[in-house]
Structures are given as C-alpha cells and as structure tokens.
Amino acid sequence: MEFIDGVSVWNIVVSKGAMSYLQAMRVLEPVLDAVAYLHRQNPPVIHRDIKPQNILVTRGRSVYLVDFGIAKVGGGGQKTATGARGVTPGFSPPEQYAGTGETDHRSDIYSLGATAYFMLTGKVPPGAIDRWNKEMAGQASLEPIRSVNPSVSPQVEQAIFMAMALRKEQRFNSVEEFRLGLKGQTVLVQQPLPPMQMSVPEQPLPQPSVSPQSMPQPFPAQSMQQPPVAGGARE
Image 1: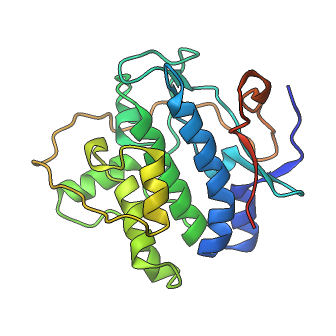
Image 2 (image 1 turned 180 degrees about the vertical axis):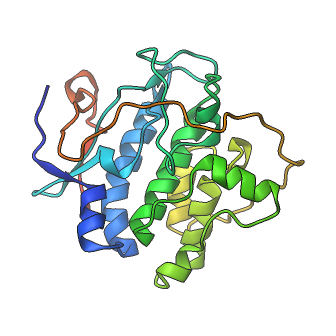
C-alpha cells in the first residue's frame, strides 16, 4: 500500500473554512479527470465513495482520489468489486441507499456535486433520504450555495444542484458535462419528470468508518496508460 503524505479536503475545509471557486476548482479538476477516466474504461469503474475525506492534497499540490473499497466494475445491475455496499450521508445518492445495485456513473456525479457543495459552503449537504422526504413534501431540500458563499456564480450553483438531482435521469450524463457546467461553458437545461416514486430504507446501510488520518490505497496508477487519480492541482 502506497503512503500518501497529504491532507484530506475534509480537514482543509474544517480547519480553514469554505473555499473560493478558484480554490475549489484547483482541487476538483484533477478529481474530475480521474473519475472521467475511470468511467471511460470498458467496463466502466464506478467509485461510489467520492467524498471530501477521500480526496487528498499533498504539499506539492498533487491531488489523489483514494479508497476504492466499494467500487463497482460495470454499469447498473453489476456487482461491486468487493461485494460491499455502503453510504456516506450527505455524499451518497439515493439509489445507493436502496442497495439494489442500480448505481451507475451518474451516482459518482451526485457525489462529485455534493463534494463541490461542501467545498464551497463548508457545510455537509443533507442526506439523500432527508432531501427526498422534503421534496416529496414540496420543500426545498438544499440551502442555496450563494446564501453562504455569495462569490459563487448562479451558473456554478445551478450546475452543482443539477449534479445533485435526486433522480439520476436529471443529472449530468457525464463528468465532462458537469465540468462544462462548472465552467459556465454550457446551457443547463433540466427536464421535469413525473412525481417521484421510489422505495428506500429509512436508515442508511452501514459503512466502515474512515479516519481522516488514515491514508487509503489509491487506484494503482501503474496499471493505466495515464495516471488519472494522481494529478497536480492547477494554478
């Protein structure tokens, strides 16, 4: 197991507060590169545990996406790489709570959006089940990012909310689309869907705890033609 001398995005935000848009993008861009690369594999690799605790930044500003313990190889309906399932409230999409195996690349996009939300607000977004119940009751389920961090543009806020849509059909269809949305380089159109109908458990499935001090094993870069999970943060 490779040791990574880095600090998690979780610890950075907890100690220093919410990031600016530029600071967040310097960290997010290498992560977006990594996840996009994983999704392009045949079959695709779905990380399913993207969160601030699993993104490490080194002193040299290299960024690592770590902990593939519940990753899944293949699209919806395929089994996990380890047979494990788990959720992290605030960062896991609702389909992951159901434990039906119907997670796909859009599940990672939800978690990327939730991670961006945390980086820009310093707040963990509400859990997907709590959000689901609020939206079923006709209530807003997310506090606007701009109410916490007014420097964030409406376009960026809308892109993050679209990535965090409770129904995956309303999310971006690829990491690259999400990237363009974050950069304001595309028109964001989210189509309305019929009323939500989905049965999910009231309590999340258990997940092994992750200590902020522990350094999980990164995806082995030497097995790839390019190193998508270890990229230098951009100036």
